[in-house]
Figure (cartoon, rainbow, N blue to C red):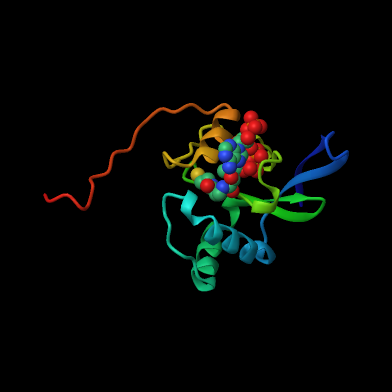
Length: 148
Ligand SMILES: CC(C)(COP(=O)(O)OP(=O)(O)OC[C@H]1O[C@@H](n2cnc3c(N)ncnc32)[C@H](O)[C@@H]1OP(=O)(O)O)[C@@H](O)C(=O)NCCC(=O)NCCS
């Protein structure tokens, strides 16, 4: 089912794209998994996700994930679990407003949701700041190479 849609006009390419955010379904699970694995450097948790792990996760959290379609093709996903946002845009569609669209739509459903962003993830920081988020906390971890 289509939940939201906008029309975006890119004057440079004189191209019109319809972006829609839809609830995910099992046919999207592998798209989400592959995108998550290819983008894992950007995430706090960096483990490789297998098909089985993905199926288990999605069976539990199916209602927490949405997929962004551009002209009906999946180009990104956003998930919110316990008010914690995770988001990724397919590399071929980054920098074209897909991430901003997903975040601006998902905060309508989860106005209190937050994002945990790695300090070196400039794209993610810019995305959330552009969508009205502000840096509030530093999370400090002990350097595991240092003796206790
Ligand atoms: C973070 C991510 C979702 C952004 O998606 P996107 O579709 O490119 O986002 P947008 O096109 O809406 O861009 C949002 C803002 O971020 C900026 N931005 C996007 N990619 C950037 C990059 N590589 N470096 C610096 N800024 C970047 C854009 O310039 C834009 O700001 P602007 O409109 O003022 O120029 C995408 O880079 C991604 O999937 N990264 C890998 C996964 C990841 O790190 N997820 C976040 C985990 S918390």
